[in-house]
Length: 163
Image (tube, rainbow, N blue to C red; front, side, top):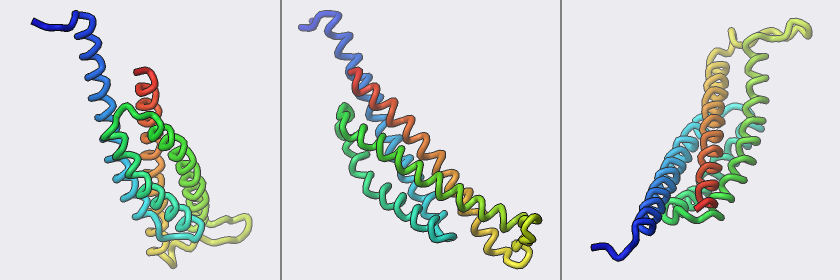
C-alpha cells in the first residue's frame, strides 16, 4: 500500500526522469568537452594568432571541467549551466575567428593569388601545408563540438528552469 496518491507518484516519477535526463546531458557535455580539448590541442601549431587563440580555448576547456562536473553532481543547478552557456558562446567565437584567419592563409598557400603575383608555396613546403591544413580541419571539428556544447547547454538550462 502506498502512502502517496496517484498524482504524487506520477509527479515523483516525472521528477526522477528529468533528473536522469539532466545527468545524461551533463555527462555528454563533459565527454564532449574532453573531445574538444583533444581536437584543439592537435590544431595548435601553425600561426601566432591561431596558436594564442587555441591556447586560450584549451585553457578555458580545462578550467570549465569543474563546472561540468558540478552539473553532473547537481543536475538541477542552473547557475553553472548558464555560466557554461555564455562562456561557450564567447569561446566558439574566438575559435571561429582564429580558424577563419588561418584558413585564409592556408588557401593562399595552396592556390596563391595571381592578381598580386603570389605563387602557391605548397610545392616547396609540403610539410608546412600539410600541418596547416590539418590544423584548420582539427579546429573546424572543435567548432562543431563547441556548437554541440552550446545546444546541449541551452537544452539542459531550459529543462532545469522548467523543473
